Every structure is written in structure tokens, then in C-alpha cells.
Image 1 (cartoon, rainbow, N blue to C red):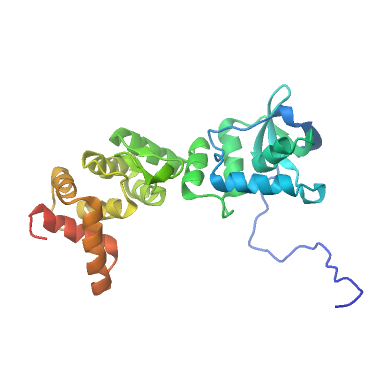
Image 2 (cartoon, one colour):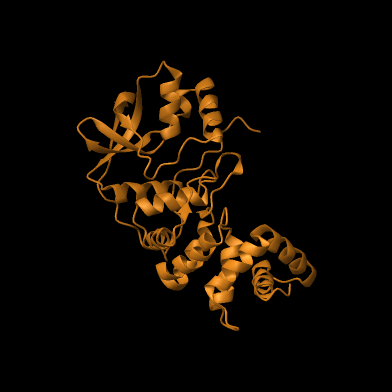
Length: 274
């Protein structure tokens, strides 16, 4: 340690392969009353137990030196939608001694643009779950997310925003947005609809990502064609968790991807020979 601080000036890095983006309009920086701030649940995260713990911690240790300006969009006279900083805003309101917060204000943005800003600000943060990213991308009219939503809705399924309380799912529930997006990339809403419809018909609660991946392998992975109804009956007769358990044991023993083994297990159970 020395008495001289190690100060490094802000300087550009070498990035010859990067094309600088257009900046858009510069936001205004000002202090806004808490009463003018609103949260749009169409794309924002709900308050989980973890959120409540974070807010309580922020209230107990609120310090202006730790507060960043909120990113907000003016959506009406005296109304500002919080894009980034809802936990700070709620902590300030909970504190009781804070009437206003510093805010960066942009204007003239649609809901889709505001949702896209939210995704851009939060995508790489650990607090964002895949389901939360999906819901925000859907609000931002991301093409792939829209295709996923269309296919799931057409099949009668339901994409949850968060795992349900006590882990109690309803038939047709889904949280495996990664696998749904993979299906949409492969064949659009039609592929999503067909695979999810099998899970819905089999009353799977929830329809698990591994099961969808196995269904995909059965239908589009080559081999002897089968009727969708035969897959439904195998899942109904033997149960999703039981089939996954059987496949897990075999996959571990054989050193194979579980979805491929699960596809084989489901096929075998169609003939009652597993």
C-alpha cells in the first residue's frame, strides 16, 4: 500500500472491429417525485421473495452514495415508466424519508421499445431468469419469442412467468423457454404447437424441457415415423417422471445425452416393450 492512489484515466480500448451504434436522443437528468413513477408488469419482473429481501436490505442501508439514477420513459404528463431501477424506487418508497430520485428521462418510446430497453439493460444480470427475459422479449416483440408464444397458445399450453408457489403446476404449464425457443428456431410456431400439444394432451404438469427435446427427436430426428397420439399414450401410461427416471439411469450408464435415451424409452413404451 502507498499513500499515492493508483488512478487510471478513462481511455478507449482498441476495438477496430466494432462499429459504434447510433446514440439516439440524449436523456434528461433530473429528480422526479416517487409519486410520478410507475412499473409496467407487461415486461418488468414481479417481486419475488429474493426481491423483498433485497429491498429490505436497501431500506436498512440506504445511502445516496450508493444510488444510481433510474432509467425512465415519460409516457404521459407527469407519468414516468421505470425501465431500470424498480427495486431502488420501491426501496425509496418503503424507506419513508425519500420523496424523489435522480432519473434519466427518455421520451417517445413505444411499449415494445421500452421492453427492448429493459432487456438490453438486464439480460446479462444474474437476477434475470430465462422466463423473465422471455416475457420482456415478448413485450418487445422479439420475433422468436412471439413465435414461441403463438405456438404454445395454439397448443393450449401456458408459459409461466415464474415457478409456481410450492411447485404445484397445472397440466400444460411450461417454464422451459430455452427448449421452446430451440423448437421455434427449427420450425417456427408450427413446431412449437405440435410438440407442446403432445404434452398438453398427456396432461403433463409441467411439460419439461427434456421431454420436449425427446419429442422433437422422435418426430423430426429420423427413424420410424410415429403418430403423435402414440407418444401421448406412452406419456400418459407410464408418466413423464417415471420415463425420465428410466432414461436417466440408462443415459448415465451408456454415456449418452438423456434426451436421446428418453426418446428411445418413449418409443419402446409405445410398444409396451420398455
